[in-house]
Image 1: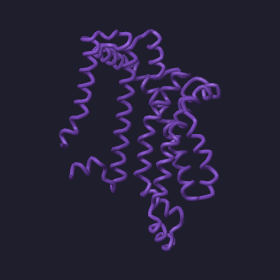
Image 2: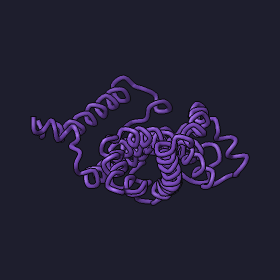
Image 3: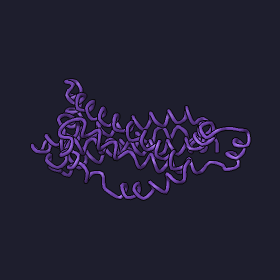
Image 4: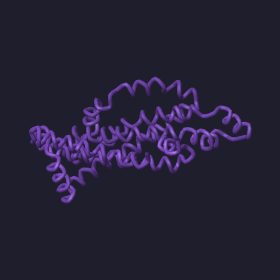
Length: 258
């Protein structure tokens, strides 16, 4: 079963490529709608060798990473404050929920008007998009701590900061990482959307430029690059979670021992 789990993703990729080949070479899907996979991969490899797509990918990843760090930090501090102090929760819960109800993509034109072209606009939208997933999972994690354990620490003379570091944070860590993993997707999405609106460089700009000339091979190549970046970032976070939240066994480990 373990070997099957490790091979399954490659089987899925192979099936997708086979269907893609059938659609283009057997059923004759037009290149302006669905490019040939071989041509797409050749174009992607040419972009990697020339460095063009790597520069675009770096611009997108840089904006996503900076905005991700800012948004996640704000969300974590906000969740901790609201979970620890009831007055802060009562003061901020309605504004936070109202902010979440606004589609972040709808803010892209406003951010462009306020900040202008370039990387700063992408960072701003990414930060806004990443706040809520980290906030809501961190808040749930902080609130799920065993109250008896908190009372025990208080009876031992521990202060709020000691309780936060020794009890609340370890209890919330698994949920915090759930929010961080979800936010990776939002970070890349927001970065590309902002590049489409007001980007100077990046995979979003590459997609927009190629789509105007119906160069679907380049568009698909950029999309594949985004998928690889997202998978790598998620895998990195999962590895970090296994290292830091070592007391939690994930589902794959439970299945392996079942």
